[in-house]
Each structure stands twice: as C-alpha cells, then as structure tokens.
Length: 191
Image (cartoon, rainbow, N blue to C red; front, side, top):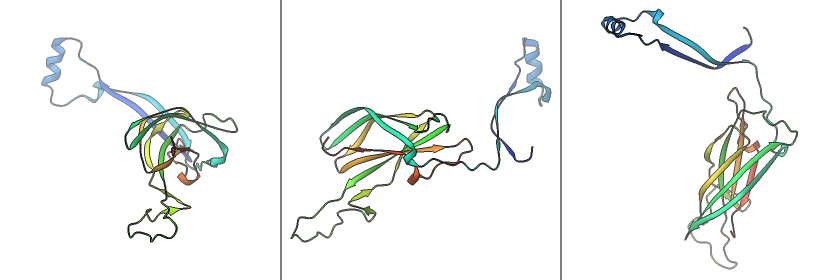
C-alpha cells in the first residue's frame, strides 16, 4: 500500500492453557515451545496517508473558557481549581484526538520607585517582555476530550496571572506550535 502508513497497531499474543494435568506435565518437560501453541489477535489498526500535513487552526479560531473556579491555600501561596473547556468556533468538535495542556506562570515585573537607585539584584529574569515575565511552561497533562480539570494548583505569591495553553495533536503525532495554540489567561492578582 504505497502512500499509506499503518499506525496504532495493537495485538495480543497468548498461549492456550493446558486443559488437564497430564497435558501440563508434558508441557513442562518440553524445552522448546511449538509455535502452533501461540495465538495472536489483532485488536486495533489505523491506516493514514504518509503525507499528512495537518493545518492547525490559529488560536483565534477557538473558544476557551474557565469555569467552576475555587480558591484555597494558606499564608504566602494560593491554590486554584478550575475546569478549562475549549471548542472550535466552526463547530468541528472532534477534529483532534488529544490535547497537551501546559501552564505558564506570569510574574508581574517589579517597578522601582521614582528617584530611587535600582538595586544590583535583578528585579526580573532576562526574559522579561512588556512588563511581564514568562517562566517556562509546565506540562500539566493530556486530554482526549475538549476539557481539562486543574485541581489544587499551587500559585506562589509573586505570580500575577496564569496562561493555560491547549496544544492540539493530530493522530500522526504532530502537534501545534505552542505560540500559535489556543490559551486561557487567568488573572490571579487580587484574588
């Protein structure tokens, strides 16, 4: 089958159990197994074209919502639980078989008071952009439906907002570039 690839091949191989005790002792005395004693069953197989370039829709093509928000925590840190859901605006609900979920913790950049000398320690890491600093994204998990529940996510006191990134993945294993993926930004400052 030129131009096609077999993927997600799942098979089960097994050996039948002897039915009586006499047969069991004979089987133990054999040093090699007869290939006819083994069986295989094909459980699942997918066929796809080998030239498959998935066009991932831009982040503006998605509706991403956060709901069922619950706050908790103790002195110095907060915890957040929420449900994130997403769907394509055009209604294609099951276009992607799975989604990777990441979170970026955004830190509000410190501002020095006017007339004061800037201290020698860095107020923000060197990757600061537009008054905010992005700390590297943290992988939270995978979803096979268009929803993800975040439970008791710890938010340090320096964090001003969280950016939840939903990375669509196609059946061939390709995934959307994170910078182009849909996201839900949640402001935690003042909560």
